Length: 323
Length: 222
Image (cartoon, rainbow over all chains, first blue to last red; front, side):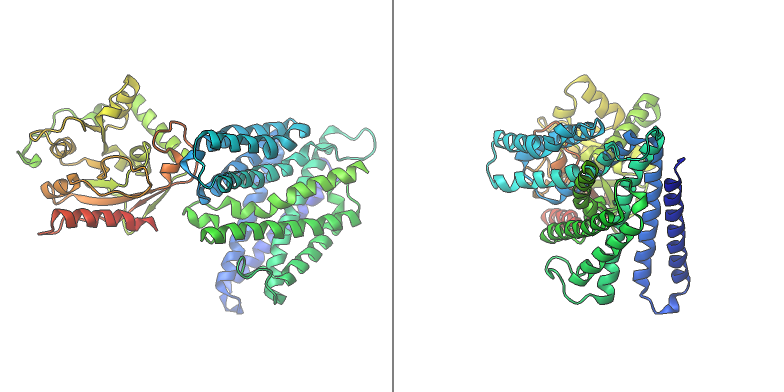
Protein backbone atom coordinates (compact mmCIF):
# COMPACT_ATOMS: atom_id res chain seq x y z
CA UNK A 1 0.00 0.00 0.00
CA UNK A 2 2.79 2.37 -0.88
CA UNK A 3 0.78 3.98 -3.63
CA UNK A 4 -0.73 7.40 -3.05
CA UNK A 5 -3.82 6.51 -5.11
CA UNK A 6 -4.49 3.38 -3.09
CA UNK A 7 -4.16 5.32 0.13
CA UNK A 8 -6.49 7.98 -1.21
CA UNK A 9 -9.04 5.39 -2.27
CA UNK A 10 -8.95 3.55 1.05
CA UNK A 11 -9.20 6.81 2.99
CA UNK A 12 -12.07 7.98 0.79
CA UNK A 13 -14.01 4.75 1.24
CA UNK A 14 -13.46 4.75 5.00
CA UNK A 15 -14.60 8.36 5.22
CA UNK A 16 -17.69 7.68 3.11
CA UNK A 17 -18.64 4.57 5.07
CA UNK A 18 -18.15 6.35 8.40
CA UNK A 19 -20.24 9.22 7.08
CA UNK A 20 -23.20 7.09 6.00
CA UNK A 21 -22.93 5.04 9.20
CA UNK A 22 -23.24 8.28 11.15
CA UNK A 23 -26.28 9.32 9.13
CA UNK A 24 -27.84 5.87 9.59
CA UNK A 25 -27.32 5.91 13.34
CA UNK A 26 -28.66 9.46 13.57
CA UNK A 27 -31.85 8.48 11.72
CA UNK A 28 -32.20 5.44 13.97
CA UNK A 29 -31.93 7.53 17.14
CA UNK A 30 -34.35 10.19 15.86
CA UNK A 31 -37.38 8.30 14.59
CA UNK A 32 -39.44 11.51 14.58
CA UNK A 33 -37.91 12.85 11.35
CA UNK A 34 -40.78 11.59 9.26
CA UNK A 35 -38.72 8.94 7.52
CA UNK A 36 -40.12 5.45 7.25
CA UNK A 37 -38.62 3.33 10.05
CA UNK A 38 -38.47 0.25 7.83
CA UNK A 39 -36.49 2.19 5.23
CA UNK A 40 -34.02 3.32 7.91
CA UNK A 41 -33.60 -0.26 9.06
CA UNK A 42 -32.98 -1.42 5.48
CA UNK A 43 -30.51 1.43 5.05
CA UNK A 44 -28.61 0.48 8.20
CA UNK A 45 -28.55 -3.17 7.19
CA UNK A 46 -27.18 -2.19 3.82
CA UNK A 47 -24.44 -0.16 5.51
CA UNK A 48 -23.52 -3.07 7.75
CA UNK A 49 -23.34 -5.18 4.59
CA UNK A 50 -20.92 -2.69 3.05
CA UNK A 51 -18.69 -2.77 6.10
CA UNK A 52 -18.59 -6.56 5.92
CA UNK A 53 -17.94 -6.44 2.17
CA UNK A 54 -15.11 -3.92 2.54
CA UNK A 55 -13.52 -5.83 5.43
CA UNK A 56 -13.63 -9.14 3.57
CA UNK A 57 -12.30 -7.55 0.39
CA UNK A 58 -9.53 -5.75 2.27
CA UNK A 59 -8.48 -8.99 3.95
CA UNK A 60 -8.51 -10.85 0.63
CA UNK A 61 -6.55 -8.09 -1.12
CA UNK A 62 -4.03 -8.04 1.68
CA UNK A 63 -3.55 -11.81 1.39
CA UNK A 64 -2.98 -11.51 -2.34
CA UNK A 65 -4.53 -12.45 -5.64
CA UNK A 66 -4.75 -16.20 -4.95
CA UNK A 67 -6.79 -15.53 -1.82
CA UNK A 68 -9.03 -13.14 -3.74
CA UNK A 69 -9.65 -15.60 -6.57
CA UNK A 70 -10.41 -18.29 -3.96
CA UNK A 71 -12.83 -15.97 -2.17
CA UNK A 72 -14.72 -15.31 -5.39
CA UNK A 73 -14.66 -19.05 -6.08
CA UNK A 74 -16.46 -19.73 -2.81
CA UNK A 75 -18.97 -16.95 -3.48
CA UNK A 76 -19.69 -18.51 -6.89
CA UNK A 77 -20.07 -21.94 -5.33
CA UNK A 78 -22.56 -20.63 -2.79
CA UNK A 79 -24.49 -18.61 -5.36
CA UNK A 80 -24.75 -21.65 -7.61
CA UNK A 81 -26.05 -23.64 -4.66
CA UNK A 82 -28.81 -21.11 -4.17
CA UNK A 83 -29.54 -20.98 -7.89
CA UNK A 84 -29.85 -24.76 -8.33
CA UNK A 85 -31.77 -25.14 -5.05
CA UNK A 86 -34.32 -22.71 -6.37
CA UNK A 87 -34.66 -24.20 -9.84
CA UNK A 88 -36.18 -27.67 -9.83
CA UNK A 89 -34.04 -30.35 -11.39
CA UNK A 90 -34.77 -34.03 -11.71
CA UNK A 91 -33.01 -37.07 -10.41
CA UNK A 92 -31.51 -37.61 -13.85
CA UNK A 93 -29.47 -34.42 -13.36
CA UNK A 94 -27.87 -35.58 -10.15
CA UNK A 95 -24.58 -36.89 -11.54
CA UNK A 96 -24.22 -33.94 -13.89
CA UNK A 97 -24.75 -31.57 -10.96
CA UNK A 98 -22.16 -33.37 -8.88
CA UNK A 99 -19.49 -32.71 -11.49
CA UNK A 100 -20.71 -29.15 -12.03
CA UNK A 101 -20.20 -28.38 -8.34
CA UNK A 102 -17.08 -30.35 -7.57
CA UNK A 103 -15.16 -30.34 -10.84
CA UNK A 104 -16.20 -27.59 -13.25
CA UNK A 105 -16.62 -24.75 -10.78
CA UNK A 106 -13.32 -25.27 -8.89
CA UNK A 107 -11.38 -26.03 -12.07
CA UNK A 108 -12.69 -22.89 -13.72
CA UNK A 109 -11.39 -20.79 -10.83
CA UNK A 110 -8.04 -22.58 -10.94
CA UNK A 111 -7.78 -21.60 -14.61
CA UNK A 112 -8.72 -18.02 -13.71
CA UNK A 113 -6.01 -18.01 -11.06
CA UNK A 114 -3.49 -19.31 -13.61
CA UNK A 115 -4.62 -16.57 -16.00
CA UNK A 116 -5.36 -19.06 -18.79
CA UNK A 117 -7.89 -16.85 -20.56
CA UNK A 118 -7.58 -18.98 -23.68
CA UNK A 119 -8.99 -21.97 -21.79
CA UNK A 120 -11.30 -20.51 -19.17
CA UNK A 121 -13.10 -18.28 -21.64
CA UNK A 122 -14.55 -21.40 -23.30
CA UNK A 123 -14.30 -23.97 -20.51
CA UNK A 124 -17.72 -23.41 -18.90
CA UNK A 125 -19.76 -22.04 -21.80
CA UNK A 126 -18.64 -24.78 -24.20
CA UNK A 127 -17.22 -27.80 -22.44
CA UNK A 128 -19.32 -27.77 -19.30
CA UNK A 129 -22.42 -27.25 -21.43
CA UNK A 130 -21.58 -30.21 -23.64
CA UNK A 131 -20.87 -32.33 -20.58
CA UNK A 132 -24.12 -31.43 -18.84
CA UNK A 133 -26.15 -32.20 -21.98
CA UNK A 134 -24.45 -35.53 -22.55
CA UNK A 135 -24.47 -36.59 -18.89
CA UNK A 136 -28.16 -35.86 -18.52
CA UNK A 137 -28.86 -37.83 -21.71
CA UNK A 138 -26.81 -40.81 -20.53
CA UNK A 139 -28.70 -40.73 -17.22
CA UNK A 140 -31.69 -41.77 -19.30
CA UNK A 141 -34.26 -39.14 -18.37
CA UNK A 142 -35.61 -37.24 -21.37
CA UNK A 143 -38.43 -35.38 -19.61
CA UNK A 144 -38.15 -31.60 -20.17
CA UNK A 145 -34.60 -32.25 -21.24
CA UNK A 146 -33.70 -28.86 -22.73
CA UNK A 147 -35.41 -26.99 -19.91
CA UNK A 148 -33.42 -28.82 -17.24
CA UNK A 149 -30.06 -28.56 -18.93
CA UNK A 150 -30.67 -24.90 -19.75
CA UNK A 151 -31.28 -24.19 -16.07
CA UNK A 152 -27.98 -25.74 -15.05
CA UNK A 153 -26.18 -23.91 -17.83
CA UNK A 154 -27.74 -20.57 -16.92
CA UNK A 155 -26.69 -21.09 -13.31
CA UNK A 156 -23.14 -21.90 -14.31
CA UNK A 157 -22.81 -18.94 -16.65
CA UNK A 158 -24.30 -16.35 -14.29
CA UNK A 159 -23.01 -17.54 -10.92
CA UNK A 160 -19.61 -18.90 -11.91
CA UNK A 161 -18.48 -17.80 -15.35
CA UNK A 162 -19.59 -14.17 -15.24
CA UNK A 163 -18.59 -13.55 -11.64
CA UNK A 164 -15.11 -14.96 -12.25
CA UNK A 165 -14.34 -12.03 -14.56
CA UNK A 166 -14.16 -9.83 -11.47
CA UNK A 167 -11.13 -11.59 -9.91
CA UNK A 168 -9.76 -12.13 -13.44
CA UNK A 169 -9.10 -8.36 -13.44
CA UNK A 170 -6.23 -9.07 -11.06
CA UNK A 171 -4.34 -10.90 -13.77
CA UNK A 172 -4.48 -8.10 -16.35
CA UNK A 173 -1.38 -6.01 -16.99
CA UNK A 174 -2.99 -2.68 -16.33
CA UNK A 175 -0.33 -0.25 -15.27
CA UNK A 176 1.06 1.84 -18.06
CA UNK A 177 3.05 3.97 -15.69
CA UNK A 178 6.72 4.90 -16.06
CA UNK A 179 9.25 2.14 -16.41
CA UNK A 180 10.61 0.78 -13.18
CA UNK A 181 7.24 0.83 -11.50
CA UNK A 182 7.51 -1.56 -8.59
CA UNK A 183 5.79 -4.92 -8.75
CA UNK A 184 3.82 -4.09 -5.65
CA UNK A 185 2.24 -0.93 -6.95
CA UNK A 186 1.25 -2.64 -10.17
CA UNK A 187 -0.54 -5.25 -8.07
CA UNK A 188 -2.14 -2.40 -6.17
CA UNK A 189 -3.41 -1.08 -9.47
CA UNK A 190 -5.16 -4.36 -10.20
CA UNK A 191 -6.82 -4.43 -6.82
CA UNK A 192 -7.93 -0.82 -7.30
CA UNK A 193 -9.47 -1.80 -10.62
CA UNK A 194 -11.43 -4.64 -9.03
CA UNK A 195 -12.54 -2.40 -6.19
CA UNK A 196 -13.54 0.27 -8.71
CA UNK A 197 -15.87 -2.24 -10.35
CA UNK A 198 -17.45 -3.32 -7.06
CA UNK A 199 -17.82 0.28 -5.94
CA UNK A 200 -19.55 1.29 -9.18
CA UNK A 201 -21.93 -1.68 -9.03
CA UNK A 202 -22.88 -0.97 -5.42
CA UNK A 203 -23.28 2.73 -6.14
CA UNK A 204 -25.43 2.04 -9.20
CA UNK A 205 -27.69 -0.26 -7.13
CA UNK A 206 -28.10 2.45 -4.53
CA UNK A 207 -28.74 5.19 -7.05
CA UNK A 208 -31.30 3.04 -8.81
CA UNK A 209 -33.18 2.82 -5.51
CA UNK A 210 -32.79 6.50 -4.65
CA UNK A 211 -33.83 7.83 -8.07
CA UNK A 212 -36.73 5.40 -8.28
CA UNK A 213 -37.97 6.58 -4.89
CA UNK A 214 -37.58 10.25 -5.78
CA UNK A 215 -38.79 10.45 -9.37
CA UNK A 216 -39.92 6.94 -10.24
CA UNK A 217 -43.02 7.02 -12.47
CA UNK A 218 -42.78 4.39 -15.16
CA UNK A 219 -42.02 0.81 -14.15
CA UNK A 220 -39.83 -1.08 -16.58
CA UNK A 221 -41.72 -4.35 -16.11
CA UNK A 222 -44.33 -4.26 -13.37
CA UNK A 223 -44.78 -8.03 -13.41
CA UNK A 224 -41.09 -8.64 -12.74
CA UNK A 225 -39.99 -5.87 -10.40
CA UNK A 226 -42.14 -3.37 -8.56
CA UNK A 227 -39.35 -0.92 -7.77
CA UNK A 228 -37.22 -0.66 -10.92
CA UNK A 229 -38.26 2.31 -13.00
CA UNK A 230 -36.94 3.93 -16.18
CA UNK A 231 -36.24 7.08 -14.17
CA UNK A 232 -34.24 5.02 -11.70
CA UNK A 233 -32.23 3.43 -14.49
CA UNK A 234 -31.52 6.77 -16.15
CA UNK A 235 -30.61 8.44 -12.89
CA UNK A 236 -28.45 5.56 -11.78
CA UNK A 237 -26.61 5.41 -15.13
CA UNK A 238 -25.94 9.15 -15.08
CA UNK A 239 -24.79 9.32 -11.46
CA UNK A 240 -22.62 6.23 -11.81
CA UNK A 241 -21.02 7.67 -14.94
CA UNK A 242 -20.32 10.88 -13.01
CA UNK A 243 -18.83 9.02 -10.05
CA UNK A 244 -16.67 6.92 -12.37
CA UNK A 245 -15.41 10.05 -14.13
CA UNK A 246 -14.57 11.68 -10.79
CA UNK A 247 -12.77 8.55 -9.59
CA UNK A 248 -10.99 7.87 -12.89
CA UNK A 249 -7.58 8.25 -11.19
CA UNK A 250 -8.28 5.16 -9.08
CA UNK A 251 -8.82 2.87 -12.07
CA UNK A 252 -5.48 2.61 -13.85
CA UNK A 253 -6.04 2.38 -17.60
CA UNK A 254 -8.96 4.78 -17.95
CA UNK A 255 -9.15 8.42 -19.01
CA UNK A 256 -12.01 10.35 -17.37
CA UNK A 257 -14.28 10.07 -20.43
CA UNK A 258 -13.56 6.36 -20.72
CA UNK A 259 -14.30 5.89 -17.03
CA UNK A 260 -17.63 7.70 -17.52
CA UNK A 261 -18.64 5.29 -20.29
CA UNK A 262 -17.55 2.36 -18.14
CA UNK A 263 -19.67 3.69 -15.26
CA UNK A 264 -22.67 4.05 -17.54
CA UNK A 265 -22.33 0.52 -18.91
CA UNK A 266 -21.76 -0.97 -15.45
CA UNK A 267 -24.95 0.68 -14.18
CA UNK A 268 -26.98 -0.64 -17.13
CA UNK A 269 -25.54 -4.14 -16.77
CA UNK A 270 -26.18 -4.15 -13.03
CA UNK A 271 -29.76 -3.18 -13.75
CA UNK A 272 -30.01 -6.03 -16.27
CA UNK A 273 -28.68 -8.48 -13.68
CA UNK A 274 -31.17 -7.37 -11.06
CA UNK A 275 -34.06 -7.64 -13.51
CA UNK A 276 -32.98 -11.11 -14.64
CA UNK A 277 -32.75 -12.46 -11.11
CA UNK A 278 -36.09 -10.85 -10.24
CA UNK A 279 -37.67 -12.65 -13.18
CA UNK A 280 -36.29 -16.01 -12.02
CA UNK A 281 -37.42 -15.37 -8.45
CA UNK A 282 -40.89 -14.31 -9.56
CA UNK A 283 -41.21 -17.48 -11.58
CA UNK A 284 -40.33 -19.55 -8.53
CA UNK A 285 -42.59 -17.46 -6.27
CA UNK A 286 -39.99 -16.26 -3.77
CA UNK A 287 -39.08 -12.72 -2.84
CA UNK A 288 -35.38 -13.23 -2.48
CA UNK A 289 -32.99 -16.13 -2.41
CA UNK A 290 -32.46 -15.59 1.29
CA UNK A 291 -36.06 -16.28 2.26
CA UNK A 292 -35.93 -19.68 0.67
CA UNK A 293 -33.65 -20.81 3.42
CA UNK A 294 -33.95 -18.95 6.68
CA UNK A 295 -30.65 -17.93 8.18
CA UNK A 296 -28.74 -17.71 4.92
CA UNK A 297 -28.16 -14.23 3.64
CA UNK A 298 -29.02 -14.89 0.03
CA UNK A 299 -25.66 -14.49 -1.69
CA UNK A 300 -27.27 -14.42 -5.11
CA UNK A 301 -29.34 -11.36 -4.15
CA UNK A 302 -26.14 -9.53 -3.35
CA UNK A 303 -24.16 -10.44 -6.43
CA UNK A 304 -26.68 -10.44 -9.29
CA UNK A 305 -25.60 -6.99 -10.51
CA UNK A 306 -21.89 -7.69 -10.35
CA UNK A 307 -22.33 -10.99 -12.19
CA UNK A 308 -23.72 -9.14 -15.17
CA UNK A 309 -21.35 -6.18 -14.98
CA UNK A 310 -18.06 -8.05 -14.49
CA UNK A 311 -17.51 -9.57 -17.96
CA UNK A 312 -18.38 -6.32 -19.73
CA UNK A 313 -16.10 -4.36 -17.40
CA UNK A 314 -13.32 -6.87 -17.99
CA UNK A 315 -13.53 -6.67 -21.76
CA UNK A 316 -13.79 -2.88 -21.78
CA UNK A 317 -10.62 -2.78 -19.70
CA UNK A 318 -8.89 -5.13 -22.13
CA UNK A 319 -10.01 -2.90 -25.03
CA UNK A 320 -8.65 0.23 -23.38
CA UNK A 321 -5.34 -1.43 -22.52
CA UNK A 322 -5.03 -2.76 -26.05
CA UNK A 323 -5.54 0.59 -27.73
CA UNK B 1 -45.79 -58.24 26.60
CA UNK B 2 -44.12 -56.29 29.31
CA UNK B 3 -44.52 -52.57 29.30
CA UNK B 4 -41.05 -51.05 28.84
CA UNK B 5 -41.41 -48.97 31.98
CA UNK B 6 -41.40 -52.19 33.99
CA UNK B 7 -38.19 -53.34 32.37
CA UNK B 8 -35.00 -53.12 34.35
CA UNK B 9 -32.74 -50.37 33.02
CA UNK B 10 -30.08 -51.59 30.71
CA UNK B 11 -26.79 -52.08 32.48
CA UNK B 12 -24.69 -50.85 29.56
CA UNK B 13 -24.96 -47.15 28.88
CA UNK B 14 -23.10 -46.53 25.67
CA UNK B 15 -22.79 -42.75 25.73
CA UNK B 16 -20.76 -42.88 28.93
CA UNK B 17 -18.26 -45.32 27.56
CA UNK B 18 -18.03 -43.72 24.16
CA UNK B 19 -14.43 -43.08 23.30
CA UNK B 20 -13.00 -39.73 22.36
CA UNK B 21 -12.55 -40.93 18.80
CA UNK B 22 -16.27 -41.57 18.51
CA UNK B 23 -17.07 -38.17 19.92
CA UNK B 24 -14.71 -36.38 17.54
CA UNK B 25 -16.02 -38.39 14.59
CA UNK B 26 -19.55 -37.54 15.64
CA UNK B 27 -18.81 -33.82 15.91
CA UNK B 28 -16.93 -33.84 12.61
CA UNK B 29 -19.64 -35.73 10.75
CA UNK B 30 -22.34 -33.48 12.17
CA UNK B 31 -20.41 -30.44 10.95
CA UNK B 32 -19.70 -31.89 7.50
CA UNK B 33 -23.30 -33.01 7.07
CA UNK B 34 -24.66 -29.60 7.97
CA UNK B 35 -22.18 -27.84 5.70
CA UNK B 36 -22.69 -30.17 2.77
CA UNK B 37 -26.45 -30.15 2.98
CA UNK B 38 -26.47 -26.40 3.61
CA UNK B 39 -28.90 -27.13 6.38
CA UNK B 40 -30.82 -24.32 7.95
CA UNK B 41 -32.56 -25.36 11.13
CA UNK B 42 -35.90 -23.93 12.19
CA UNK B 43 -37.76 -24.51 15.42
CA UNK B 44 -41.36 -23.53 14.74
CA UNK B 45 -43.37 -22.99 17.95
CA UNK B 46 -40.96 -25.42 19.53
CA UNK B 47 -37.68 -25.39 21.46
CA UNK B 48 -34.79 -27.82 21.74
CA UNK B 49 -34.95 -29.63 25.07
CA UNK B 50 -33.23 -32.53 26.81
CA UNK B 51 -36.49 -34.09 27.98
CA UNK B 52 -37.39 -37.45 26.51
CA UNK B 53 -38.79 -37.07 23.03
CA UNK B 54 -39.48 -38.92 19.84
CA UNK B 55 -38.61 -37.00 16.69
CA UNK B 56 -40.56 -38.32 13.72
CA UNK B 57 -39.77 -37.16 10.22
CA UNK B 58 -40.45 -37.73 6.56
CA UNK B 59 -37.85 -40.01 5.01
CA UNK B 60 -36.22 -38.91 1.78
CA UNK B 61 -32.53 -39.74 1.90
CA UNK B 62 -29.87 -41.76 3.67
CA UNK B 63 -28.70 -38.50 5.19
CA UNK B 64 -31.98 -37.87 7.02
CA UNK B 65 -31.13 -39.43 10.38
CA UNK B 66 -27.61 -38.00 10.35
CA UNK B 67 -28.86 -34.52 9.55
CA UNK B 68 -31.63 -34.45 12.15
CA UNK B 69 -29.14 -35.73 14.68
CA UNK B 70 -26.63 -33.08 13.58
CA UNK B 71 -29.27 -30.34 13.72
CA UNK B 72 -29.89 -30.87 17.42
CA UNK B 73 -27.83 -28.89 19.93
CA UNK B 74 -24.90 -30.96 21.23
CA UNK B 75 -26.39 -31.70 24.64
CA UNK B 76 -29.64 -32.89 23.09
CA UNK B 77 -27.73 -34.83 20.45
CA UNK B 78 -25.89 -36.80 23.09
CA UNK B 79 -29.09 -38.25 24.49
CA UNK B 80 -30.75 -38.82 21.13
CA UNK B 81 -30.58 -42.14 19.33
CA UNK B 82 -31.59 -42.58 15.69
CA UNK B 83 -33.56 -45.68 14.85
CA UNK B 84 -32.11 -47.23 11.70
CA UNK B 85 -32.48 -50.30 9.52
CA UNK B 86 -30.23 -53.14 10.56
CA UNK B 87 -29.95 -54.60 7.05
CA UNK B 88 -28.34 -51.37 5.82
CA UNK B 89 -26.32 -50.23 8.82
CA UNK B 90 -24.77 -53.49 9.90
CA UNK B 91 -23.26 -54.18 6.50
CA UNK B 92 -19.51 -53.65 6.69
CA UNK B 93 -17.35 -52.81 9.68
CA UNK B 94 -17.25 -49.04 9.10
CA UNK B 95 -21.00 -48.69 8.77
CA UNK B 96 -21.58 -50.79 11.85
CA UNK B 97 -19.05 -48.79 13.85
CA UNK B 98 -20.64 -45.51 12.73
CA UNK B 99 -24.13 -46.70 13.57
CA UNK B 100 -23.37 -48.35 16.88
CA UNK B 101 -20.59 -46.26 18.34
CA UNK B 102 -20.79 -42.81 16.74
CA UNK B 103 -24.50 -42.25 16.23
CA UNK B 104 -25.42 -44.62 19.04
CA UNK B 105 -28.21 -45.87 16.79
CA UNK B 106 -30.83 -48.46 17.58
CA UNK B 107 -30.75 -50.98 14.75
CA UNK B 108 -34.06 -52.57 13.84
CA UNK B 109 -34.30 -55.75 11.86
CA UNK B 110 -36.83 -55.00 9.15
CA UNK B 111 -36.77 -58.49 7.69
CA UNK B 112 -37.33 -60.44 10.88
CA UNK B 113 -40.12 -58.86 12.90
CA UNK B 114 -41.57 -61.10 15.58
CA UNK B 115 -44.49 -60.56 17.86
CA UNK B 116 -42.61 -61.09 21.09
CA UNK B 117 -39.74 -58.89 19.87
CA UNK B 118 -41.59 -56.03 18.22
CA UNK B 119 -39.50 -53.08 17.03
CA UNK B 120 -41.47 -50.69 19.21
CA UNK B 121 -40.65 -52.67 22.35
CA UNK B 122 -37.04 -52.82 21.34
CA UNK B 123 -36.92 -49.07 20.75
CA UNK B 124 -38.57 -48.25 24.04
CA UNK B 125 -36.36 -50.63 25.96
CA UNK B 126 -33.27 -49.10 24.42
CA UNK B 127 -34.54 -45.59 25.01
CA UNK B 128 -35.10 -46.24 28.70
CA UNK B 129 -36.35 -43.31 30.71
CA UNK B 130 -34.08 -40.62 29.37
CA UNK B 131 -33.14 -41.24 25.76
CA UNK B 132 -34.86 -39.54 22.83
CA UNK B 133 -35.41 -41.29 19.51
CA UNK B 134 -35.40 -40.32 15.85
CA UNK B 135 -37.86 -42.38 13.83
CA UNK B 136 -39.17 -42.38 10.26
CA UNK B 137 -42.78 -43.59 10.37
CA UNK B 138 -42.98 -44.02 6.60
CA UNK B 139 -40.73 -47.04 7.02
CA UNK B 140 -38.65 -46.48 3.91
CA UNK B 141 -37.53 -43.58 1.81
CA UNK B 142 -40.10 -42.17 -0.55
CA UNK B 143 -39.07 -42.03 -4.17
CA UNK B 144 -41.61 -39.50 -5.35
CA UNK B 145 -40.78 -36.74 -2.92
CA UNK B 146 -44.26 -37.02 -1.44
CA UNK B 147 -44.70 -37.94 2.22
CA UNK B 148 -46.17 -41.45 2.31
CA UNK B 149 -48.66 -42.94 4.75
CA UNK B 150 -47.30 -43.52 8.27
CA UNK B 151 -46.88 -47.03 9.57
CA UNK B 152 -48.47 -47.90 12.88
CA UNK B 153 -45.23 -48.00 14.94
CA UNK B 154 -45.55 -44.39 15.97
CA UNK B 155 -49.04 -45.03 17.30
CA UNK B 156 -47.90 -47.94 19.48
CA UNK B 157 -44.97 -45.87 20.69
CA UNK B 158 -47.35 -43.13 21.75
CA UNK B 159 -49.76 -45.60 23.30
CA UNK B 160 -47.16 -47.36 25.40
CA UNK B 161 -45.44 -44.21 26.56
CA UNK B 162 -48.11 -41.51 26.37
CA UNK B 163 -46.00 -39.00 28.31
CA UNK B 164 -43.20 -38.77 25.74
CA UNK B 165 -43.27 -35.64 23.57
CA UNK B 166 -43.65 -36.43 19.88
CA UNK B 167 -41.90 -33.82 17.79
CA UNK B 168 -42.76 -33.63 14.09
CA UNK B 169 -39.78 -32.88 11.84
CA UNK B 170 -39.92 -31.92 8.21
CA UNK B 171 -36.91 -32.43 5.98
CA UNK B 172 -36.92 -30.35 2.84
CA UNK B 173 -34.75 -30.74 -0.26
CA UNK B 174 -32.45 -33.39 1.19
CA UNK B 175 -33.69 -35.89 -1.40
CA UNK B 176 -32.01 -33.69 -3.98
CA UNK B 177 -28.76 -33.61 -2.00
CA UNK B 178 -28.54 -37.39 -1.91
CA UNK B 179 -31.37 -39.15 -3.77
CA UNK B 180 -32.15 -42.80 -3.40
CA UNK B 181 -29.58 -44.95 -5.15
CA UNK B 182 -26.90 -42.26 -5.35
CA UNK B 183 -23.73 -42.14 -3.28
CA UNK B 184 -22.27 -38.78 -4.31
CA UNK B 185 -23.98 -35.75 -2.77
CA UNK B 186 -24.80 -32.49 -4.53
CA UNK B 187 -24.37 -29.58 -2.11
CA UNK B 188 -27.77 -27.92 -2.37
CA UNK B 189 -29.45 -26.10 0.48
CA UNK B 190 -31.81 -28.06 2.68
CA UNK B 191 -34.06 -27.14 5.56
CA UNK B 192 -34.90 -29.03 8.75
CA UNK B 193 -38.01 -27.80 10.57
CA UNK B 194 -38.96 -28.93 14.06
CA UNK B 195 -42.58 -28.45 15.07
CA UNK B 196 -44.48 -28.25 18.37
CA UNK B 197 -44.92 -31.52 20.31
CA UNK B 198 -48.03 -33.64 20.03
CA UNK B 199 -49.40 -36.50 22.10
CA UNK B 200 -51.87 -39.29 21.57
CA UNK B 201 -55.31 -37.97 22.51
CA UNK B 202 -57.59 -39.98 24.74
CA UNK B 203 -59.80 -42.25 22.59
CA UNK B 204 -58.03 -41.22 19.41
CA UNK B 205 -58.10 -44.03 16.88
CA UNK B 206 -54.93 -45.34 15.28
CA UNK B 207 -55.80 -44.02 11.83
CA UNK B 208 -56.79 -40.60 13.14
CA UNK B 209 -53.61 -40.29 15.12
CA UNK B 210 -51.38 -41.36 12.25
CA UNK B 211 -53.13 -38.97 9.88
CA UNK B 212 -52.75 -36.15 12.39
CA UNK B 213 -49.06 -36.91 12.86
CA UNK B 214 -48.52 -36.94 9.11
CA UNK B 215 -50.33 -33.61 8.75
CA UNK B 216 -48.13 -32.18 11.50
CA UNK B 217 -45.04 -33.05 9.45
CA UNK B 218 -46.56 -31.70 6.24
CA UNK B 219 -47.62 -28.45 7.90
CA UNK B 220 -43.97 -27.65 8.58
CA UNK B 221 -43.27 -27.51 4.87
CA UNK B 222 -44.10 -23.82 4.65
